[in-house]
Length: 104
Image (tube, rainbow, N blue to C red):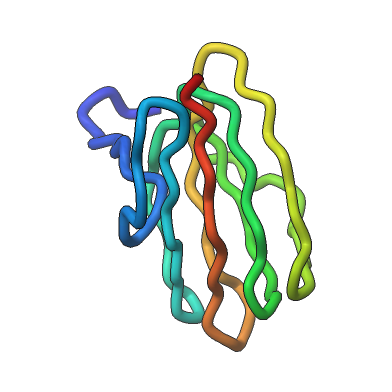
């Protein structure tokens, strides 16, 4: 990973809610659009709105397995320390999910 590359702590497009226990984000990507590299420091889950297909890329630029998802799918990620990655909408439709970071 390039140490000069900016890694965001924003894991979504828009922060919807935050308190001392959770942070809730709306994440929307147009076809071909990327989140950019971002950092998760706590466990999180996300709920797919409408479905689509994402390609994950790890901190070193390696592609992760393609993840086709359906409307209403929920994915949980256990974070040990930190997880740096980006997600790219490789589908033909806009992508949307709600990300819930567990802070407590």
